[in-house]
Length: 433
Image (cartoon, rainbow, N blue to C red; front, side, top):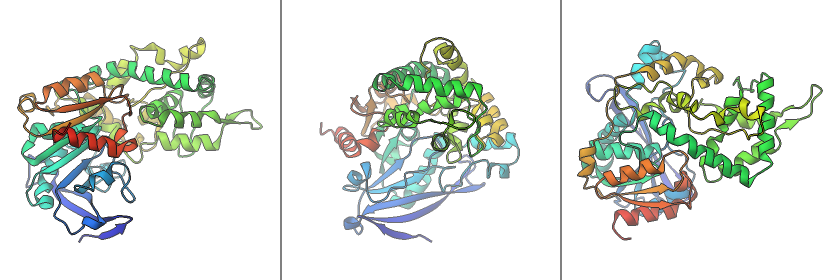
């Protein structure tokens, strides 16, 4: 049964699909995928080509748009759009602390989650494509991790693609997680320096909050243990277009006077817990390093290990001197599974995934070098989340892929500059630029 309904300017249809849990065992257990079909109201009866949108993450369901904001309005001029909740996310057989115990203990859960990377997502797409398009190829727009999935699609099933569009999501084809984070920490430091240059008073505000967290045991209203490392991880915001401004507003009124002295305000804590909690996207924490794993080397909490090579991120050392407290960003650490109540039951599962040594390759360099699918990618000049040098090396390795390198947008450029970004990529892919 499908539900069709209307919003301003669009007609929406809920779509559900059954796919194998393990594509190497197509007659075995199945899971359900959910996707939302979107078409402009004035084109609802037309036979339009399809555009599949793959969300960033991993672990996030597709955008729940109202109407046709951002890039969607531009896409609906030419396409019927499918917003897919990738397996384990959104309404697609969600994988979280509540559902994973159905698989068994931590070992069974870890084995189960190995089937939730980009290779399985691509194979899901190829199962549902004939049901959606009648067998026709479709255009894929991949944002961030969705771009990683798109490169995997070009490696595994290019015959299903009419065009491949990637925004902020060209992965390294062969870098280990250690290489990814070794390149990431200097970028994060640059973003923090730029933030403090824009908002100089935030240096002292961040130091005061960090000092308070080092000397007080703070538990947020949802049960999250708010440590200084957790506070630093709020720097994740600095990779988005408006993130520096949002971080500033969070910091500027953090304390209130109380009978026991200054304390972090309820308002500050409420905002912080919403930003820190993985309740809505636990696969981000569980699989974030696994999206880089392609051989027998374990990821072994890569971001945590590599951080020790950058002592300037040690908040206690910064406070002992006159240095600013540095924020971090898009790094997952073992302490998160102690602090976050949504992750605590999954700590052993995460440890098993971090120790795993049987990861399989996600990309096929030879097939990418022979690519014939029209492809274009937006590469953001100093993207905090995806290394620009890695992205450009991959762009050179994919035959025919055209890039637009820009410093006009941050990693979320498809959101903040959606129509322009999509227009530019379509023009590049169609060889109109």
